[in-house]
Length: 289
Length: 165
Ligand SMILES: Cc1cc2nc3c(=O)[nH]c(=O)nc-3n(C[C@H](O)[C@H](O)[C@H](O)COP(=O)(O)OP(=O)(O)OC[C@H]3O[C@@H](n4cnc5c(N)ncnc54)[C@H](O)[C@@H]3O)c2cc1C
Ligand code: FES
Ligand code: FES
Image (cartoon, rainbow over all chains, first blue to last red):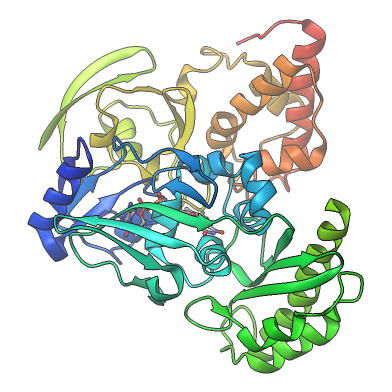
């Protein structure tokens, strides 16, 4: 239960970090909050030869312009979790943060670390997929943006290449009339989810004009449900047919059972969480009008 | 080996450590601070909570080399040899501990919460207390005694108007 040997490097700025990461290639790993990486190292599930400490890098701001919210990769869960602007534009993201671990972990764990770690039932990858976020990635070769749907490849696997550093994540700001919600069930508070569902609804008057649904627990990455999202369009906020939406989502997914929950249980759970997420988003939409 | 200087419980010390050494182990072995307990070594139990620059952190998820120049406080720095901090006293009177293995972690995780509530002069709901201690596992008490201890520590300090420590 102790990590293998490695060399430690404290990067002074982004250029320094990407230079170090390029130098070490497959052997190099950034360390942010360490709240996922160090457990993996202690269990020897990860044995990086070189750790590049990125905690001193200037990636700690939450910035808004007319179209985008940009969260620096090092912003800690606790910090963006209490930003009222996030609650206004991205309520499902705000809900999601509160399901992450415990206070001490939220205090140190970072948004960039969580997205890069890509746990299959982690909340943030789901929220990023729900809101069509993009990852802003830097390397010696320059900067590129990766859409969330393309970023998460499998459980704990992203399309980040060795030598690349996630510097920020950008969320497009939804049009004014939108609401959302994120629902989750785990074994205990603070545990990773058995399943979770996020809903984002855009509406005009009382009619849903666009919907997004995301689900964790059905596959190795969080999934969207375009057909069911389309089904929601045109429904009214006071009668979104949430039970039917849940039934359809449950029928669509094919989760595998594990030591905690059977496949049938997960499917039923996803249906129920979908109903709750859609109803909660509609209730918030009505409240906001 | 990497040379580092840590300020631990008010005293500075320079030492050479392998980068792979966990802060928890360095505090226990190089500083002799056996109040830093290790329950799981992967972030799940909260036993190893210490303060780094005043902020609770899991010392099993922190490498000592990352703490160069930082001020670290362990449970040994709290309440003096007779454990006289209001929270420690309340753990005793409210049966917040049995075997005591988890206690240093609870105390270090909860002190900032107790202080925040005391300075706001606000008695938190039990749910808030349980949330504040949700990262810490206790196998003995069933938690009720710990919740009662937190309430008592806050209540006593609000009533006493002081921040005994
Ligand atoms: C007991 C416990 C419970 C938890 N519960 C939850 C939970 O319910 N939900 C949840 O989502 N998480 C949970 N976590 C994990 C927590 O959210 C972590 O903070 C997060 O997953 C990783 O963030 P970090 O900053 O600690 O990253 P680190 O642990 O430092 O890094 C994680 C990975 O990301 C890489 N990385 C970090 N930053 C970057 C970057 N900027 N660019 C490229 N790669 C990078 C690292 O190399 C590493 O591979 C839990 C952790 C613990 C210990
Ligand atoms: S020993 Fe650090 S959290 Fe369990
Ligand atoms: S008192 Fe024994 S584990 Fe908490």
